[in-house]
Length: 272
Image (cartoon, rainbow, N blue to C red; front, side, top):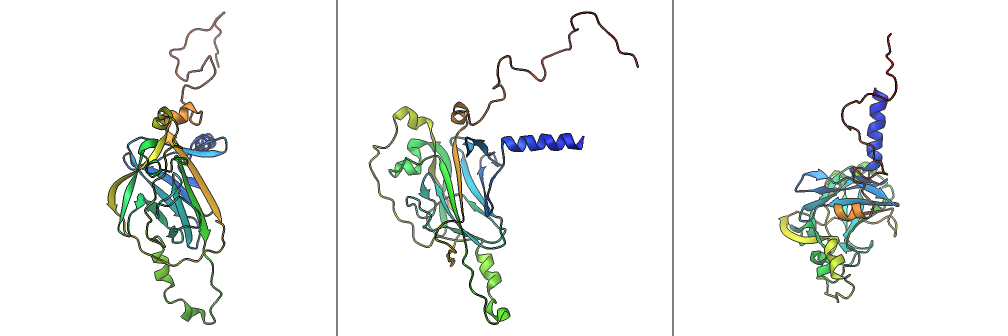
């Protein structure tokens, strides 16, 4: 009994996972309207989640290590802190050891963010600022922190270490948000396709406190890159990323077809 239950749970986990886990950081997307983590579906080597148009969402990053890490986060190819076209070398959030960070929107200041919400491509923040080409993808570039050489007297060298770790739970941009320039919308797809694809909008203002902390990257290149694609459920079903319950070859077997009929031929009875 226990073996069968374990196998069933394993099978479900292979179909859809609640988070995208890497060796340094785990990423999940939470639908704020439904208060649930969106399951991650794998297709052709890429990870996807299905968003509901009009629903706000936030990103949850969990540091899986015993040291601070820097997470440079992009949505639709745009840095969520600076608003610049995303690049791993830009500003990011510092996450304390084994801590969880919730990112609910585009950072507007050290006190406010503009909420993420699923919307059509034309209404997305990226498209409205002339950068629609990478709509539909969330990226995280993760960096380890450069470790300082051991101090001659270790006990006296770290009086503020606990405070630094606590500060890492809330990290902030290393530069003020830059106003993104508007570009030509010639790269937008045709109107029908643009209306069907899902992007992330620039929503209502919310209080979100952050402050600056120092962080020196151990390497120039990220230690981990996380990529999670998203679209509407209808689009993901149409592309074969998500299989509907009835998707099977004909004739499709049913688990509960009705009452038990008599078999053909003579009826045999079993007696103990």
